Image (tube, rainbow, N blue to C red; front, side, top):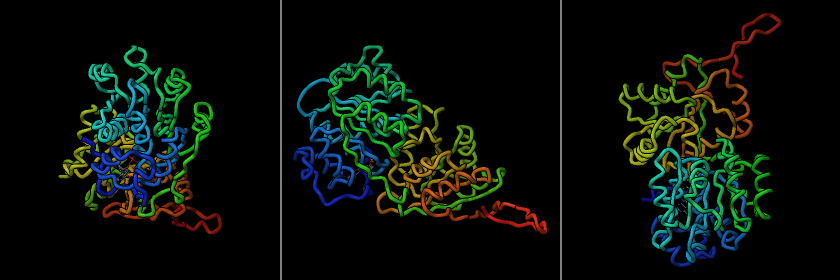
Length: 402
Ligand code: AMP
């Protein structure tokens, strides 16, 4: 089942999908899953995609980019046979979500797909490949395994998508991506999507794409305007008490990012003991457990989901009221990316960060990037941390916030 169709989608344009050049049958399939009008990125990318142009799209998860690249490809795949399209994704979750969208629209037009992701058995994937899917959605590592075992042919690929390219590079997939690009036909259409445009991404575009058009829809303020930011500065020993306090005080759905698996396991146990409905996803959990945890949050089975950064990347959870950073993320991009999990469309959301004095540099960088200072907040029972400074003259003790 396609679980991506939600009532509260990203902001849409006034166009219709047929205005963009898509056929009536595809527009009807979109209507069935609740897509009435294209989003901004879809309005920009679909016509170029249908013309056969290469496109670099700079946009976050949540903008509707999956349909932006999938729809022109689906339209072009309606005639012909063999595996002609390849979508590379950074994580299993994104690959599964992309595949379910492709199936939701393509299946009734006879299109077949396969999803090649790690952490699950190869057998069923091999069976899917034997049925000669029109479109393969894959994480780079597992795709390369299949290619080396000659389970999949890539010599007919006419459309390639590199989704969340910056995250694929963060996760160390560059060598596999380069190998894959090396065996694909040179004559092809390539889409690349990324939330940021570092030099490595620019280089990939320059080397492997042909005069790509750029669609830059990065938000000007870097994060959605409906987001309320909160910063809880505490002593290192108080971070856990602060997390438990937040879980008690805040009643809505909550996605908590933690650095380490052990912290996620610890927090899960503690929150359960306090009577909260909670689940966790991290690399130590099986694929089935991760899918069940995400589904449970969507269905309201549990209110709180704990996730390590890598496991959570790009997951599409439609309604999250509260994002909690248990520890400041290592990079500004991560803060912005995580914040993108809330306040989608016209919704409001909160991003709370539990941090210590050790995070002060990255806090400054985030504040600069989002153009506002993070309001300092307190939680009952946890003493806020303030920096003590000695002045040279008078040796007076000053308390100040950095
Ligand atoms: P994406 O950025 O592709 O992950 O999409 C984010 C969310 O928006 C998903 O839940 C999609 O189902 C939803 N969505 C994307 N495009 C549309 C549209 N044109 N109309 C309604 N919902 C949409």
